Every structure is written in structure tokens, then in C-alpha cells.
Length: 229
Image (tube, rainbow, N blue to C red):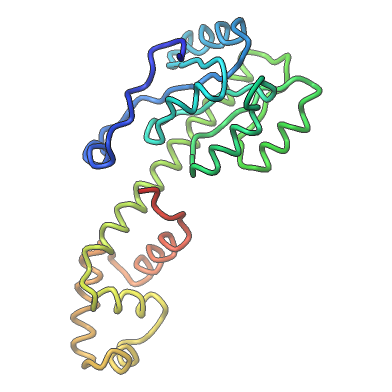
């Protein structure tokens, strides 16, 4: 069991989608097998107005992990059972975006560096100053906010693409690959005027004010990871 009030129990996908626009306060998850360390970090984080949730091991953290919960995680590299490195690997398999800050002793720096190569946000070597940890936590929370905002934009654009008719999707694909109206008409077997009408509807439905903006939308969608659900 986690040692502070747990985040809300993950709800079904349909309900999560319905409340996705409701902003949730970030949580800082502390994952460490040392009870003294967990208690000290909990007090430190609460002293600056942050909401900490502590976990005695990686399995406990994963049991209550909610991908829709904003925040970051402070994780000890070396723990019995599942190590911090193994936890990072598991989060990668789940497509998790939560920024992970590893806390490491001198002998575990190489492990922390390996974890960062696998996508961890940062690591902090013991002993550390409280302010150094708080600065890293704030940067991790900013990264999480930025990432979630970007993914939300991608979700909106994907929904707009879904609203296009099959023909409009064909026009969207062709126009964002630089095909002129005349060429698109020939490829689709329709008149240039019909292409112009479809193109105008694509621009309107996608909320694009220019062709350049439409192309940027397509590039963002193509670069983004596939939706998790």
C-alpha cells in the first residue's frame, strides 16, 4: 500500500476521455525502500506546496500508476526487487511520459546514466542540497506540463482528421505532400474545382489558416507516438 492518499483509481477509458479537459494537480511520486528517506522527501516537498505520494518499492508505484495523472517521480536507483533501472524500462514499455528523477549513491552513477539513456529525466547524486532536488522537480513538472500540452494538441488534430470524409482525407494527404490542385484532380479523377472545394473544407475542419499551418499539423501528427488508447 502507498503511504499517503493514493491518486484516484484509474477510470474506464471512456470516462477518462470525458474528463480529460479537467486539469489535475501534479503529484510527485517518491519511490524508495528507505522509510527515513521517504519521510524526509515527503516533508520537503510538502513544505513548498507540492503533493507527494510515497511508495516503498517500484511494484507499489506501478500498482497505482495512472498515465493521466500529471507529475513526476523521484526514484531510488538501487532497490530490492525491481530496481529503478528496471522500473524505467517498464515505464518505457507502457509508453509512460512521467519524468523520472533518479536518486543515486556514488557507486550507482553508471546505472543512473544508463537510465537516462533509456529516457529518464535527470539524476541526483547523494548527498544533495534540498534546493537542488526542488529545482529538478520543478523542471520535471514543467517538462510534464509541456509534454501533456503537446499530446493534447496532437489528440485534437487527430480528432479533426477523423472528422474528415474519406475523400477529404485523400486531399489532406496529397495537399500536405505538396501536390498542386491540378495534379490532385488527375490522381483522384475529379475536376480541379472539386479539389478546391474539398481543400477548403479540409482547411476549415482542421482549423488551419494557411497551407503552411496545415503541413505543420501533418508533420506533428506523423512525428507523434501512436495514441495509447
